[in-house]
Length: 74
Image 1 (cartoon, rainbow, N blue to C red):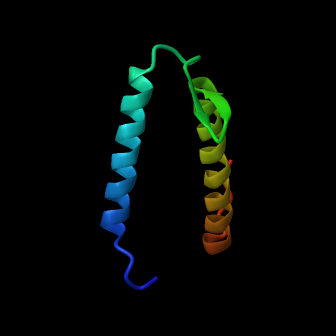
Image 2: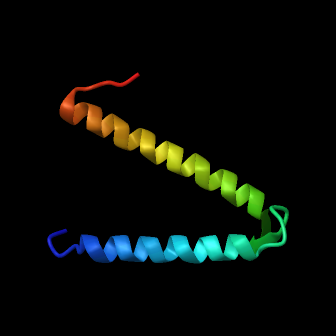
């Protein structure tokens, strides 16, 4: 995408992270729930899911980096 604005993308990501942190901090506990499409999810479930997603995507990025530079880490 030639017209992608990296600074705008990072600003949007940072704003979304700040909003999520504020919502998490306002929750009475990790057992607080919210619903999406009729299914309840606890804040604890959401946090664990986000950790899993970040780990998965970091693994993908590491595989791409290894293909680019050939370095494998310990």
